Amino acid sequence: MATKKQFKNFAELLAGSDKPLLVDFYATWCGPCRMLVPILDQVSSLLKDQLQVVKIDTERYPNLASEYQVHALPTLVLFKAGQPVERIEGVLPPEDIVSRLKPLL
Image (tube, rainbow, N blue to C red):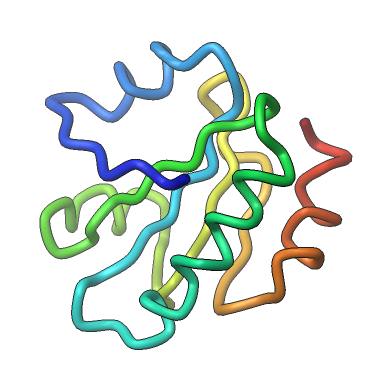
């Protein structure tokens, strides 16, 4: 299940994670972002202990969206050891997301 995170420092959030983070950059007004919610729940259950899914609202954290060049919503970014290693833009079926992420975990 995805977690909505509030934080003071994104680097601290990345550093504090003991497993890769799949960050869902979204906005509350974004229809495709809402469509992605049940998909991410499936991805999270398929990859249980291998990653953590975190949702970040680009309206609340526009500097992060800019820093990670989020130009389309939704955008998923997989962070491993604090570094972005994969980016997925738009809505994909859960099995497609899993097949792109699994080799990187």
